[in-house]
Image (cartoon, rainbow, N blue to C red; front, side, top):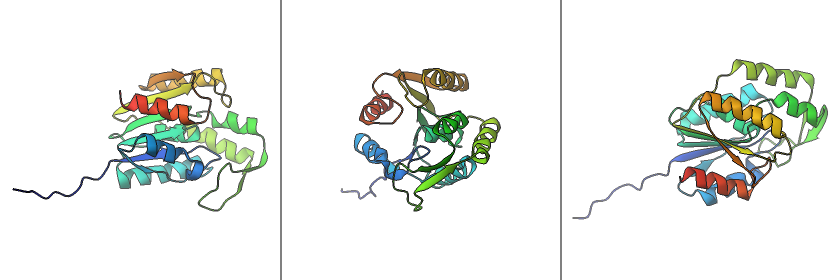
Amino acid sequence: MYSWEEPKQKPYAIYIHGFASSPKSGTRASLARALPEYEWLAPEITHDPYESLAILNEWTHTFQPALIVGTSMGGMLGLYIDAPAAVKLVINPSLEMERTLRQRGYGKHPYLQEREDGETEFIIDEPMIQRFVSFRKEQLIRLGTRNIGLFSTDDELLGHEMSKRNARVLADAGFDIVWSDKFGHRCNDNAVKQITKLLHE
């Protein structure tokens, strides 16, 4: 006898973009093509870490994602999301954002991608930097069901020494660390291939 069942909804996955980017960067679409078994979401974060983490925790509470993937600042924020039932995979997490921002330089800078909030530029100043310093000191890394840190051996933004420091922090917190020479700081197609391979192991 035929038994009708409701189609099962795909589990949700959340992608977290980097500091000067947006959900429209194209990475979410690349991940969706490579990992179609998930329904991919991409919240827009801001240049304020406290506000951004609040946004991400709200999305996580609402959608209960099975997977969280973050790059750069998004990778850093992904460490602190309260998601014990999700796999966490962070790519080149920028833990010391104050250093990265000072390297970029004070003043106005354009966003790299079109933003949903309509903003086209942001201002780096010392108050912004100090909020990241305070944020980093206050947060505790929260683990998921599986925890992976994917690092580039040739990260042109963070540099190899900072990447090694960041990898040690994650390893001490319980993350599995993977190094790759297939991509730089940004999450390009080679990085997506590496992510897919790791998640299917």
